[in-house]
Length: 265
Image (cartoon, rainbow, N blue to C red; front, side):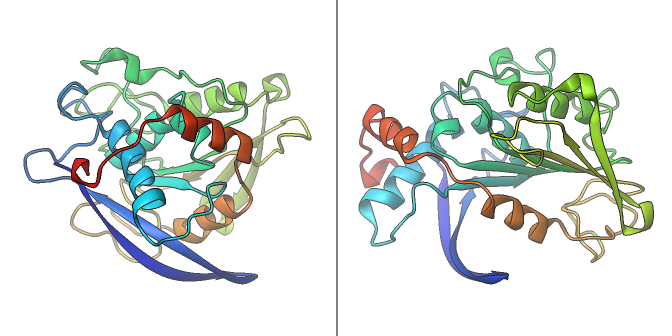
């Protein structure tokens, strides 16, 4: 059984922006989200459907006023892997405006019981995606081959795939900007003006391990020898603020999805 909590937050970047943060929770028997090698099959627990139902529930059965053009998804580690699955899902990629993952666990088909979770099935173009990752991550290896639970996609390869699907010109290579005295590399690609060069973005943190990048020391659920020189949260919020989804796409999806009762959530 999955559940969620709702929090009201006020953030500042340039002007005041009030947003609602919805935090999904797994129970003690099902701790891993869909997309992980240890997650139950989708026939038993389907977290893509759970996210869809959660959005539907908040939109239809609560007094919360939701701007359907500005729904976003972000997650850490296995949660980042689920964000990757949502971004590649035919329906959720048309409902959620932009996606961001920190230390994302993007498993390859050989590691997964349900191989189709490794592939992209969306026709939306582009899908705004941001990924932040430490280059000495021992839980989700930056190059993929050293991930203990099974091979994951190399993060640079994963992001090149996102840029390719966004219509960016891979022949021109990427655009790398160094930050924090060279400790962080921001990578973007040459994309059409209609898409924008910062629709697909990657931040590589040198000497940082498995964590939600921030200046504070890592917590118990994280594995990094040091904190990060810059914080991921404002980067993600700024990225989200630049992206909205077309109302028509959101409306079409709403018509295509079925109603869900409160008890189902």
